[in-house]
Length: 198
Length: 202
Image (cartoon, rainbow over all chains, first blue to last red; front, side, top):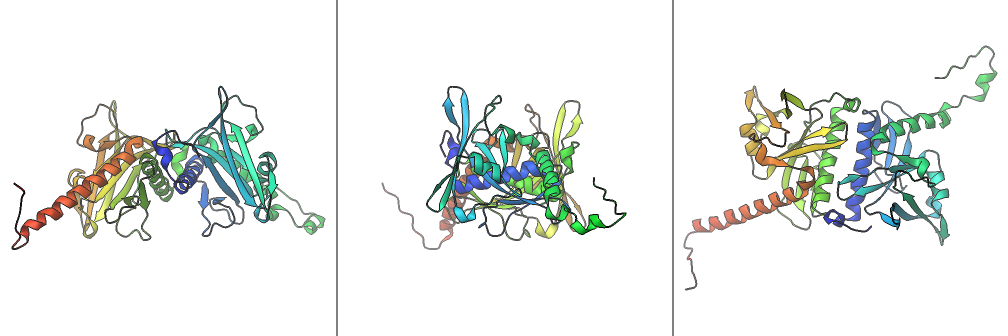
């Protein structure tokens, strides 16, 4: 991570913690308190948070937070966020219930800057220039931070103040995919059974 | 934790516990980033002493500052153009701590911007306990901190105003000042030692 101010001298551990705090804050407050986040006691599955809607059991999704504290100018007026990291091949998780949150932590405003990116793991692993080397996958994401950009990461952009509502939407969509949401096959075969869904 | 105050917006529906966590994390972020990573914060495993954080300078031992975070998610309009941060809380008399190393951090958490509004306040415990309209009810001390948020205000809390982006530097300064104070107190105790002789170069 590069540096362009005093605040840049925070350690990578501090940076990671602050980015996680910021993400949690925007989710909790932006959802009007509906979203709950839980931190795994041991972090050996690359999940920073388990996220669920308050009062709902059995349905949640996991999120990994990635941040950068500098932006890169790839052309005259276009600033990019660059994230790259490695994952051991056997630990790569492709699941609709596993997402990445990627954001720029602005050292001047001491907070996350707009836009942020919320990306399903399957999309991220496909789009972030994957390279397999030895026993590891290397991913490299370079996304434009400019308002008018139409790059490949555009569909995953979320404003910080919209994060809470976006995660509520994702949770609702995922609940339809959840194994518990599928009806036992035999049920539909019973005569006179009426299935009503919201 | 003792955070209190509710706001009018949709985001105000977060619980007191969520508000406490969010504002403590926000404070920790601003202190870490604003000090360029020099300040470390530790949260006690049990919160029985009303300390939300032990704060120290990275690598320095024996000089920590204890902090209690208080927040409100709404401002109070006390006159036509004056918005006030109002925080009301009670402390059991037996647990009231007046110590130079125990401070309060008080702030308005704006639910619309999802961050603190400026100014925030960093107040020594003894000052807050003396000036925040203390009243005793049974075995509890009740305090009401009421500070103007207006830029031109010169109320009693003005000396304790800190902009959120300056919090890291302010906390570092408080810790440094306390360290000097302690060092000078330690030196003054020398005078009480019997048979001590002072020698000075001519």
